[in-house]
Length: 183
Ligand code: AMP
Image: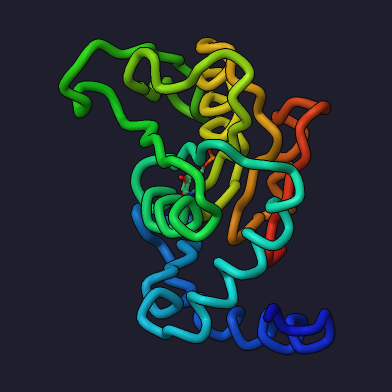
């Protein structure tokens, strides 16, 4: 049985304590949200998985698309828990077979995400998962990638939203965005 809403709120406050702020990583001026303490605590990790899976279970998720690399950790665990398949969206050149690719702009320059061709059947119901949304470029590229294969993106889930960067505004209006912890 899942915990009550009040119990879940108390658990989420506890989860927040397992996010470690690391200043100036990977470069000066960035406050990195390190989720490794959270992963190392079984109660905190389970709370994250329970919260996201119970939120999206009613939507009927066929596959989870996890974004390299910390989206793999949460996405794969969520997929197994939700009875869904898992698909990795990877940085260029990592996947061995034929891929589809979407490029997106960064503050300086651009980056790309790739996914194996035929990862999704048309109209398959997909949940996109990553650990953090900052400017929203990565997640919007992951949604675009899923849509190139005709997937029906039913939601986008993050453990952490850096709300002051307004990344949500880069995501499509017609997809539900769920973040567990907002900063
Ligand atoms: P963005 O495309 O700007 O939304 O950046 C999101 C991606 O970068 C995610 O895959 C995050 O893992 C990573 N990321 C960006 N900013 C941070 C941060 N402050 N702490 C940890 N990860 C971050």
